[in-house]
Length: 194
DNA sequence: CATGGGATTGACT
DNA sequence: GTCAATCCCATGC
Image 1 (cartoon, rainbow, N blue to C red):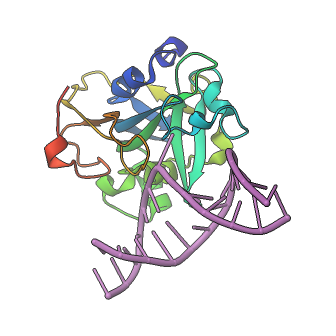
Image 2: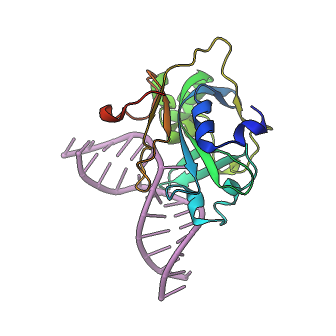
Image 3: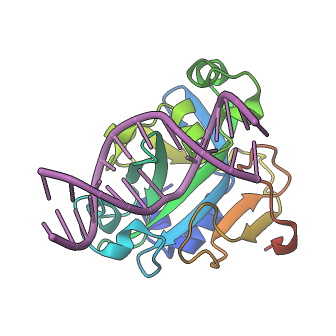
């Protein structure tokens, strides 16, 4: 994954990240669910403009944006678009590939589909914390790799984002069809393939 | 300086 | 289905 990959419209990056591999040290998983956030809509933190919290979002692409949600969970995003534009892709779910036992120890759970099936869960499983905010995804320790050789691109489902109250109508959530690791059941009436 | 609101999860009714 | 936990940060006095 090079910097140009991230320096594109954030919705395109969110779509293309499904199938890629998120890695931190010995733990890695295939991305099966993403959401796009852009400064132009109010659900995005960058919508309020340049602040201490959002300056990473407005910085160069291919950096990690990690923040704490509900006082408890760390959520991992990849900063996108050109420097000066506030936008990022939230990684919402992975299918675990490597380091399963370490993930199980961190999560206190056994079943693979329970380890990374949510944005807070995957951050805990991969030990991604606030200290990783602003780290470069091209230089590690956190990196996003191309899909594995032989990995078959699944059908992609598109729908509205989860857990937000503002701009909830935008269809900026992308899921790999059929994955048991997706974070929430899909609303039946809104199902749509791309 | 005080306050309020989350891009969530897990436990419980 | 409901609900509390718990911390960071933006906002407003």
